[in-house]
Structure formats: structure tokens, C-alpha cells
Length: 328
Image (cartoon, rainbow, N blue to C red; front, side, top):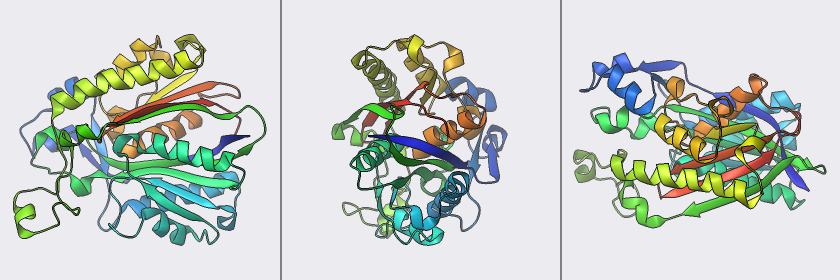
């Protein structure tokens, strides 16, 4: 038995922050941002809009596209680093908002690799035969943890998310293989220092701006270039495949140069690599499912095609996934 994707969806907030807007906020330029990241604009949530709001809109699209009732859903997984609350999971809030009264679920925190982690978890639970319909979502409200006076981070991130419906499949279509990694020694190079049990919110942590994302850009870049490329190539080697066998490669959208390095390592030409970072920036756990839904909408995948996913993120976390696409 395989876990097959039977519907895809995405949500991007209406508000847009362009590079030209950022020129007015920090010492940067449109040319500088585009040349180093490939980003031209990013979307931001509206007043009072949170991750569960985006997630519920994605989930409702999945239900509509698949013809499922909320009662048909028995599992909800949400990959996010920006939950509405620290205690109640975003998955629980989403479950309530869509009326999925028969579902249980939880959040997965793996930063930008979160959706790949959630896909692996959801696929294995569906393949167990116990769960029939699983909603897997990757979504982040990065604007809630970004310091818009820090040009090293504010130019990179945006808000948004996407998701899939996973169902049991008796044919060969679905998730075929994955490689996942974690290296906690990388936590000092990328993260949010305060707000957890180590540094609870206080006047001091707020004044020191410890509730915002920080990163050691050079270290993260070097790590990402090597490891996302390595894990992408390794999953091909493990399955006796080459870049010629892959129909579409959807990498995490963090930096155009990192994407190009991974594609080159796998022997993939530009036509096989899906890139939308120019329009959305880095939406963390949202990048891959957003891109996947756009690819489906553009009819870039056909029955039997091989799809390769790859990501890296804070933690450090990184991984790849190989999927045999089935008609949806």
C-alpha cells in the first residue's frame, strides 16, 4: 500500500511587500535582493490573520477539490514554526475550524524542512492502513517573528502555505522513498532565541529583540548548498535513478543560488526545476506545497511521473522525498 496525493492547495495572503517597499525600511535595494536571493516580492498576512487561518483555507480547498466531507478526515498534520499559540497546536485549531470531528492531529516543527517531515509522517500513518484520509499542511506566518529593521532576514521571508490530501493507494503511485536528517548542533546558527522555556518572554528578552529570527547567513548558506544537494543526489542513487528520470524537482525556495546548486548536482536542467521564490520569498514550511499546487495547476505532472522534493532548514534539518505521481 502507498500513500497517494489526491488533492493539492495553497494560500497566499493578499498584502504584498515588494523589494521597493523594503528599500524604504532598511538599507537595501531591489538589485541587491534579487542578485543574492532571486526574490522580488513576498506576501504578508492581514491584521488578525494567523497560521491556523491560512491552514483552514488550505484545508477547505482540499476538501472541495477531493469531494471529501470534513467528517471523512481522520488525520491532520501541520508543519509550522509559527503556531497561533505555544500550547494549543495549530492542527487542533484547524480541525475545529473545518469541522473535522473525526480527526486527530498535531504540529511538526522542523522549520523549512517541516513539510517533508510531515509528508513522511503522514505517508507512514496512511500506509499503516489505519488512516484513510490525511491532510498534510505546511504554513508559516513568518512576519510574526521577523525584525523589519534587520535587512539580513526581513528581505528573505514571507507568509503563506499549502497542503495535500493523502489517501491509501493500492497501485504504485505515491510516496516511494525519503531521506531525513537532523543536526541539533546547527541550532546556534539559525533560530528564535526567546519565547521558549530557556528564555521565557520578559522585558529583557523583548528589549534585546530576542523574539525575532536570527541567522548566521554565511554558515547557513554553506550548509544548505552542500546538504540539500547531497540529499537530493543520494535519494536518486538509492533508487538507481538519474536526473533524466525525474519529471519535476521542487526544492525548498530559500535562495536561487542554493536551488541551482542542488539541480546541478542531480543533473537536472532548468526546465525540470520549479522556482517561484521571486514571487513569494521563503515561506518556510510553505514553500514546497505552494510550489506543488502551482505545478499541478500548470499541468506539469502526469500519471506515473517521478517527483523529487528537497529541503533544508533550521535545526539543522534537511531531507528529500521521491514520489510517483498519480492522476488527481
